[in-house]
Amino acid sequence: MTLDDLPTVRGAPSVTATQMAEADRFTIRELGIGGERLMENAAHQIAVSARLLLGSVWRKRIVALVGYGDNGGDAVSALRRLAGWGAEVIAEVVGPSSKARPSLGRELGLLSPAPALIRYPLEGDRVGSPDFPFQNADLLIDGLLGYSTRGAPRGPIATFIDAANQTSRPILAVDLPSGLDPDTGRPLGPTINATATVTLACAKPGLLAPEAAAFVGKLVLADIGIPHLAFERLGVDTRDQFKDGDLVRILPA
Image (cartoon, rainbow, N blue to C red; front, side, top):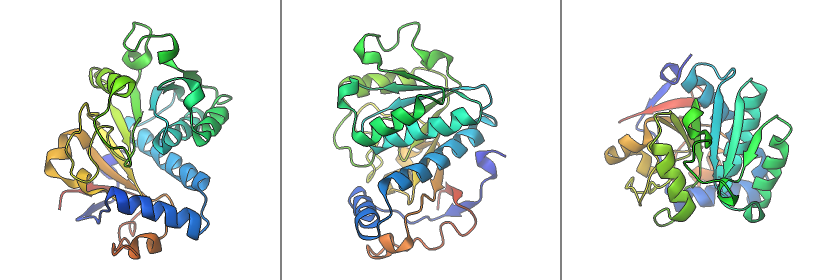
């Protein structure tokens, strides 16, 4: 089975970055569904998407590009599952380890025994050096930036994006390609050119914009356990989007 074999939906509903933040807040704080549980659910769907994209992850080298937001935690948690399925996994964490958020630190701690290689390339190695594993990866997972990011990627994030795009390796973006505006679909600066994007809970309007197609690649929508109520109270009806499965391909309307 591949991504092309997933159930399909057309004209999928979408939520802005502000609406998605409110849906997350309501789910966690009002409904009591913890962020850790949502991250575990997201990670499972990312790992499944990676397996569908590659056909098999057995003995494949999968490298996650890890930022400090929830996308980074999702990507690291997905690596843990992929390691359990027989993949060789590497987490490339942007910036010094001292800046890692608690949720990311937790996931990195859980990943270590997987086994996995966790690197902080900006603490000594140079991105793009001959031993940098982008060139040898079977798949890159983009977990650098999420929907709440504003402004053009700069510094190490931009360097990672450029390095990833210069490879010929497939890239799976978590939620949206890093550097893409979630609401408009315009690149804000250096932007990941994804082979496929697995967006979480509900599509973002920028992913559906025709001009974003070259960055998004194949668009997959994943159920991560956010109830319909979290979106319905915002005037967005998501009841039908997972009627044929919890992982679906979104096709142009």
